[in-house]
Amino acid sequence: MLEFKIDAERCVLCDACVEDCPVRIIERTDGLPFIRPEREAHCLRCQHCLAVCPEAALSILGRVPEASLERGPNHLPRMEQLERLVRGRRSVRRYRDENVDPALIDSLIATAAHAPSGVNAQGLVFHVMDDRQQMEQFRRRALADLADALAADRVPLQFAYLHAAVPAYEKHGVDILMRGAPHFLIVAAPEANPCPHEDIIIALTTFELLAQNAGLGTVWCGMLKMLLETLPDLKAELGLTEGYVYYPMLFGHPAVHYPRTVQRDESVVIQRCAITQHD
Ligand SMILES: Cc1cc2nc3c(=O)[nH]c(=O)nc-3n(C[C@H](O)[C@H](O)[C@H](O)COP(=O)(O)O)c2cc1C
Image (cartoon, rainbow, N blue to C red):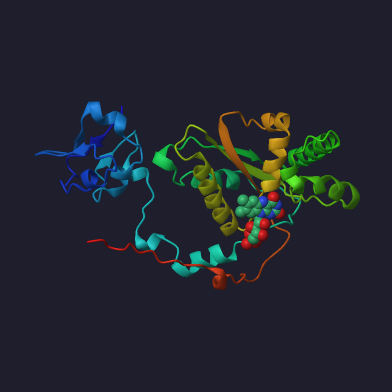
């Protein structure tokens, strides 16, 4: 049941909901907009109808418009601010030894979960290590298990970077695997989602920008992905189950500050596309 409801006193019969529904299941004849029961199963649950209604007259899925955030031009960051965030985002590989406030972590994840997913499938799971002491235990376990796997020749050759991780830690105390970070976030999506790989990367990209805007450091962690692919028992212990695709990111309070952006504009390739017309 979609619980599609129209407040008759507010609805001005403008058809905005009818026209914006991506699967065109909202109809209107003479009266108020409606969805035929037999078409409800086609709903993507995207809530566009609730978001687009200019009169806040529509609720669906038990969501009322009053509980949404307003989204007028005055509520959005300026273009120049967003540009600085995107250009000034850096991979942070040095962290302070302190926990990020769990309430901040939860709020960043809750907002990142608004990132789009193919066919609005959603269903992402956010695996978070939110305690730095737990993370330290995980780091030690990971490096010990990796050392065993290396000794037993169980680390695939294509994971060449992993081969350097154990000596770097044992000889120099340098953690090239998880960069001494106090936390990780691993986003997982059901393989059955129409676009699971894209879904997790978009969610992590969104989390990264939000986290850096909140003063945190982040770094994508291909090394941790390789590690977990090499050590299935450790992966299972984190609650990462079969049937999901996933990717990790490290984060925490940074021990490094970048007072300026890097400069990459000259390496941008813009190829304008055109189609030849055949008569
Ligand atoms: C998919 C992906 C995986 C990455 N894996 C790692 C990693 O395992 N360890 C690391 O230190 N950096 C990792 N990075 C960070 C890149 O090296 C970094 O983005 C790049 O050098 C550019 O630096 P910037 O992010 O500061 O612009 C990864 C980045 C991406 C996008």
